[in-house]
Image (cartoon, rainbow, N blue to C red; front, side, top):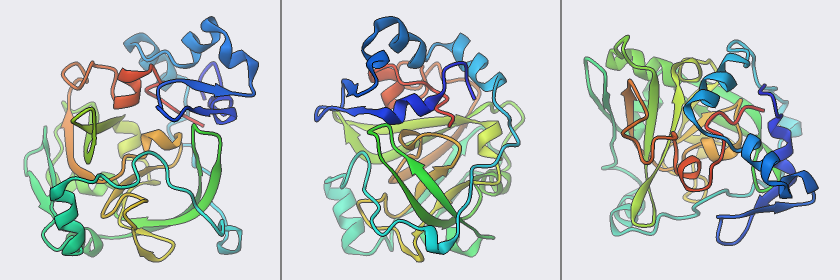
Length: 252
């Protein structure tokens, strides 16, 4: 948990343009509060992470507690020709690249991911737009994928590059190595015992259960271990962190 709890985020949402926040929490309208809440500078990155419990687990739920309806967040369909071809072939030719600071770069199919040791978890998704839902996710732990690639000790962050485009460029997000090797951080290819739908990020999305929904990158195409976020976008660690100043560490 950080100095300002991220639960405040769930009380207000994005506008249609996705670039302004609004909601019933009047504090969100105050510039000083917003600056603290959404500060993404490198000093706060370290402070936020230092105040969190690296071993804490997100709550897990029973099957009978799963939500009957689970909204989509962010992009609902990348809409590119390349992605459309993958959908048409049921992602038979899709590959996720694992690279950066690794000794053994990987190119993994959905089948490859399904053949790895699996983790299934029923967790609650808390969206910055102000809604929550409980669903079941399945996939290999990201940490095991990184181990298979021989991630190097110099790596401090993992960057996810996605198939959906924002302003003509791929969506991107990042987490640190603490969350990358957390047992509940998985590369999910299944939701509620079915292959992921397009709206929920097919064929693979990140599930980093201790953070808000915008950190759960969908349509993952590349996973790169890096030493610094300086060369990624504007250097704040993710599309929304760069574009609007969302917190890099969105712990809940």
